[in-house]
Length: 113
Image (cartoon, rainbow, N blue to C red; front, side, top):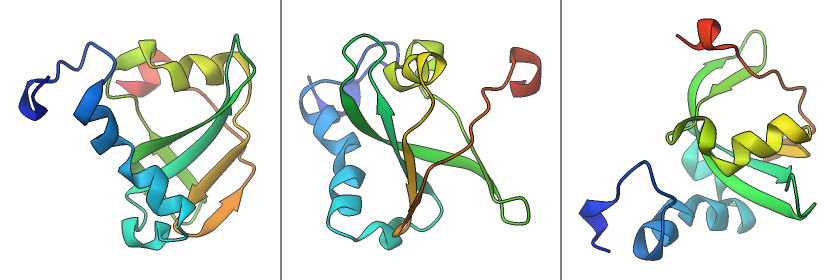
């Protein structure tokens, strides 16, 4: 699959998967600060496997006063991380080099619109 031909309705594979997971490595190497507040690293539990996963997610809105981060799924409600959060709460969120256990709330369709 070519880099420019990824269909957002499918799960990324091959080169696209590697490109989209580069932020995971930056967070692991303690270089999350390079991404600023634009990305967060979500650690979540698999809804069926129970395995621990880490997914980089782009931040849509960061309310500094409330300490809230609003993120959305580029592939809609079919994203594995989103479906995992519906089944189990997030285990950890990391922004820059700071990590914590979040309180999460999934928005309704009306709120998200």
